[in-house]
Length: 403
Image (cartoon, rainbow, N blue to C red):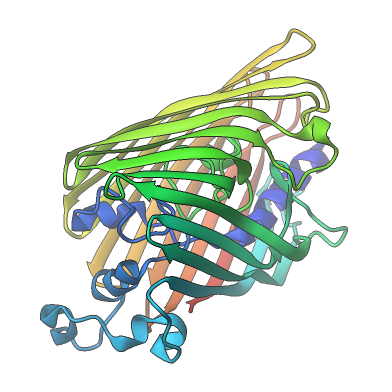
């Protein structure tokens, strides 16, 4: 019984190594309520545009000489491969390499002192390419990293993430109405909640909306106007899963209102049906509904919050009602250095004994152009029904190159 809880913690810890997307909802501190200008994906995250690369250097990166920031001129090194390979305006190519080390141990409960120990990780090695021809756009991200089957990353017998050559995203579409409307079809991240870097948070795992490994195939329409942004996606199923019975069909959407340049509120909704849920192995109607907030009370502090309800209805006429919450502060005492504490809670359904509770403390330093050094420390207390409560500690050190 206790070993079951420990296995859950080990899987969660392994999932911590899958971070790959560049998503900074905290950019609201710089007045960026919308994500479209800086990202190829109109809802944010993933590959940066040329403008996004420049703003990353000016607003995100650490500079030894503060005059660089004052002059407002992005470094020539912001281009692909540090600007060494010039690209035509119609072509955007970028790379993403992330590696590091993971330490995990059980710290409370009957099996305290046991765990996965220390192991190296290759989290992602991706290449992204986007072609822009007037209104037409085509985008793909292919790489080597943790592969997903349904909502879960595959874990090998050795306890590490099962890596493979994967296509994370591939879609074609068009931009219309002065780029306010983007219509696309392909394998696309689900439009739901905060598109944050911490992909293994309970708000992402319980709603199955991790933008790194839980993309779906479908049709999407995204809009970005002054003060409003949102996206609606018709889900046709994840065609990287076989057989077809495991594929979810349905819809997902979000809308966000910029109350001011540094304060936004949003709502998300998702409903899917699978003839055979990949976890429960029964027909399942799955829903998630919630809201999120982004607020920068000062230029150096950004606060992010999300609360979601999760509702499942199985073929056994059984309702499962749970949810998750996330609260994060991102403090930037000097440009390029971030201290990021967070707390979270989540419950699979009403049969769980107690909600899972968690606390995060992260430090991120954009030390050099195209480089991020990051340390995440995570404590989680898992309390399954009829099983002794178990707490785990995870430390994840990362080196990230975005080329």
